[in-house]
Amino acid sequence: MEKYDYIVVGAGSAGSIVASKLAAHDSSISILLIEAGETPNKLQMWTPSDWFEVLQNCPEIEWGYQSVPQPRLNSRVIQLAQAKVLGGCALHNGMVYVRGSISDFDAWGKVAPGWSWNDVLPHFQEVEQTMKVITGEADEFINDLFTAASQYGLTYNPNYNTSKSQYGYAQFQFNVTNSPNLTRETTYSTFRPDRYENITVLSQAFVTRIIFERSVAVGIEYIKDHQQQCAYVQNEVILSAGAIASPKILMLSGVGDENELKKFGISIVANVPEVGKNFHDDLFVSAGFSIFPSRVVPFYTYGLAPAVIFGCTENSSSVIDIESSVGVGTLKGFSGPKHSFWLWPNIMHLKSTGTVTLCSSKPDDAPLVDPRYLTASGDIEKCKTALELGMDIGNQPGLSQWREKQITPAPGEDLESYIRETADTTQHYCGTCRMGSDEDSVVDTELKVRSTSGLRVIDSSVFPLPITANTAAATMMIANKGTDIIIRSLE
Image (tube, rainbow, N blue to C red):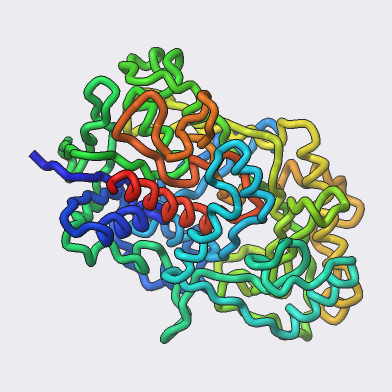
């Protein structure tokens, strides 16, 4: 019978750190790191400039999740990219590194004591000692873009990750290494759990449920080579499967809303109604401009242009809820015209929240994901304001030597209709196993699943509140801090 001290489910951004830190702390403990995906086997996946093409053309590393039709987005079904591979979503994301704002984490600390800015900052810094973060280099186009942002009324931010405020325009930071060539990083490739003798890495193994004795997690059931197998645990099972899969696995295991689980004949282990609730995601909108045919369009080896604009929908520099990335038509795999540039405002802190629920008791069936985009009052107005920011900056005099005309939205087009037809996910899913000090939260401030023992969740699903950032950096921080919590419990 396979038995380990710890089982970590998911070898992505969180799980790879958890397993590696535990192994480094004590070489005598045994750890199983289990992952449904396989080893990334295409050079293109590691090439930052191919990021967008990988997202579209490598279905072998995708779960294939999608939303239910979204009524407020013209009933569109939104494709919800989520990686299934050793290294997780760092194999297909934009590689940008954004911690989030000080106010984000101070808000966390109010609902989850011990997770305020001063508590989490050392863990960001510790991760950054291993995950190298580089700052993109500006060029003529970026400098002109920054001039336009200044003309709009924004200020230059020398480092949005270390400044007191994120507000302003800045050079984007990326999780890539530049030796010898520009190469994408994942926590699996940098923390290297496979180098520890006390870690067993099991890939292409699909976890179907957690095995409980009463309310104690004692192991996992998984499918490997078309055979159902089990592995057992002495200390803890740690779920690091992401904001969609972690709640799904909990519910299949009998942890969730008992009224929902009974519909599928799932035996109840713990009635934790908020499992799968509080699904947060950001939307992005697009302001596109054609570039004069006589201009040489830059090509960015980072994928995205090395520029970001942080703004606010409320005419205040103290509450940031817009993070606009920038792209040009030379982005590989981009379907727009080559001679074009784009501002893509991500609208953050939207009030709409959704759900991840089961559609059956069969592990092979994808969960039902309903983000409920734009259902909350005021969200569509925030999107309109963010889109106007992108349009206004793109039309400033500073970009006149590049800008031929605005191509989308078309001049005079109704912005609300345009947003409902074109807004899309930023893949910033979080919150479905919400952390908190209140009894309704799914996990407590030590990331233990309520009404169970021997079980924690350590990934983006535990975000108690959304942040002004892409989720990758905060997920790595949670993994680092969460593992330290486990290690302290052993001492």
